Figure 1 (cartoon, rainbow over the protein chains, first blue to last red):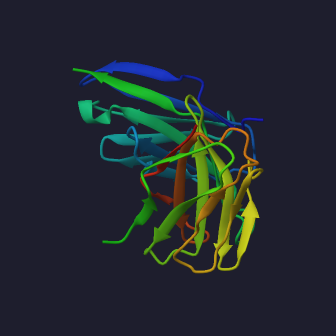
Figure 2: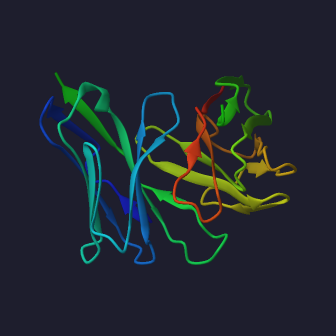
Figure 3: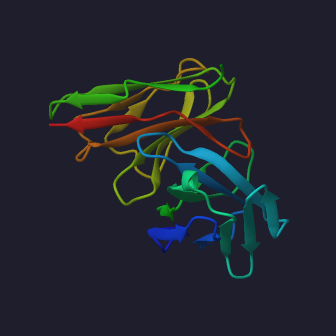
Length: 115
Length: 112
């Protein structure tokens, strides 16, 4: 049962435009959400996160929006740059008890920025 | 420099052999994790450890074993019982209760 879903396996966006990556989750216990960026043959690197007490978090060109009622979050990248071409993973955490934290990852969306 | 080191980057083994993947971190993190990535799939959790000498099974622990004798080290053994061992393996660490995980560069294991 995939608790974190990224329904678009790939996305192509022209350089300078906005990239919007979507993520849906089913577990209502999730209260912290993260986006990771991954280049081929490398480990993912943390990009941005959001707590369930917020509905928006912004860091430079990257903004994450959280809609708790819809169990949906999205990552906006604006303007998109060629270096943004990578696979983006959405991840969620349910920090119910101390020591029980782990991340549940989505299947990833491959973003390609077209020059 | 602080970080997580996985070795080797590429590993080839014959079917039926056990193989151990190394993961070392100098971030002083208590929690460490092993994930597996297959083409077109997300990262799936194999094992995790929140403290030395203790570890928990993740979603796909069958055919794998781990140890956590030192805070800095969390080696993963892929045993001959693992039916599809060829994959990209990622090790990560975090502070317990932390908000992000730090990943190593991964080990690509190919079993022939």
